[in-house]
Image (cartoon, rainbow, N blue to C red):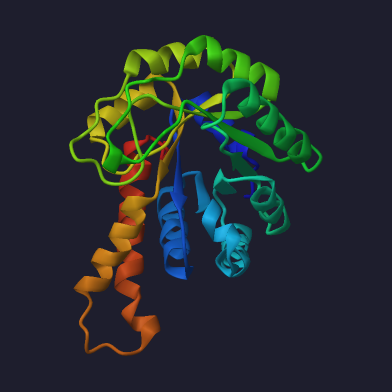
Length: 273
């Protein structure tokens, strides 16, 4: 069942869980996530990074995602992750995305609002929800910032842009952490209560399970997993008998690793309720 971004996150809000959003790159990662959703009956979001929309990768992987979505009986959405600008957003529209993110978080607040609002207005013409970001979620290799998203800024941002989802800075970063992060759970609660968009946690890979569970309880409704999707596939590839030369057979094990990883996160987020 194909859902837009807002409607699939509404399910999480109504039932008190977070919808897992998995970054996918190829047939095997798409199939692994699809199989996990089928096994658990959970809603899921397929995501692709902005850079993939700057190459032919999205052009070829997007039809795989759309075919999977057409055959899935569970709620599913297709999302542009960290859209760098309007060109990437337009390509996501063209390739069948049902949600887009525009990331202008490095801009001053008013400029971020203006850029994001423009994308929201474009997306509204097609009934597509938009995720914005307020408070930059940086790279784990550079350390985790404690400059958390302010509640008053979040309320202003959501009211003036009309986004249905808001990525916030609450103690996570992208990539592998040097040490396990400690999330600003009280701030998440305040953000959840202080504005009307669904809260998104970026940098979910590597966050301890108890922190993830507490973040969901505090009000996070979408959690992104990218690095660990890659690691699960690569670990699966390394474990395959190298004497297997037929690629369709070779990739069965790695695909199963992605499925198992996705199942574990679906259950952790409570999305299999």
